[in-house]
Image 1 (cartoon, rainbow, N blue to C red):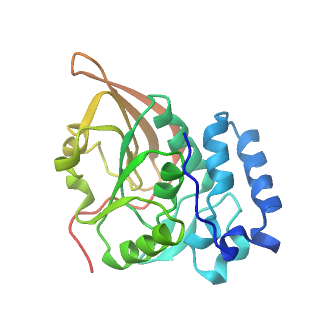
Image 2: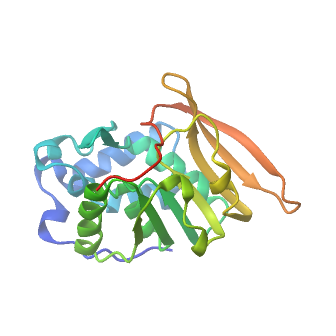
Length: 225
């Protein structure tokens, strides 16, 4: 259940982006409660330093969020791993990501061999993410649109990952979740957000579980170029 990445020399990394540094990040994630080895291996393989500004490359494998411009961030690796680990429990094949950002979360999902669809409202971020996907040889479908709408023409999805926080789960996204599927999203306002997992049951009802306290940028409507 993995996709072979086309790694260029700059993707392999040296110094603070070397494989040894990546392995230390994986060790920290394991110590912090991430137990799924498939998820940890995807974090190990995907070159996070290619998803941030070169000036921040030395911090790429710290377990922290980093700015990517336009008031957005690349998520903390622990959060990416926890969200990935959660959706993998439903054995998904087709996944929707809302909020492409740098493209890192989508790349981690793609490295697992999943069919990934990702939507981003900020055109400049999406263009940069697409370049990264191409450089890594990843076949990730992407769209410039309002993420709150999702991508209904390609639904239902076995899993949905939302990378920005809304006061409540967005109904339009929940409706695109397949029976047995899982949606993982940050919910709440500034300073009071929780990572929530929703599972759609056979009878159409949904089960909720709070996974962890988190801090995300807000999920906004509309589009920017």
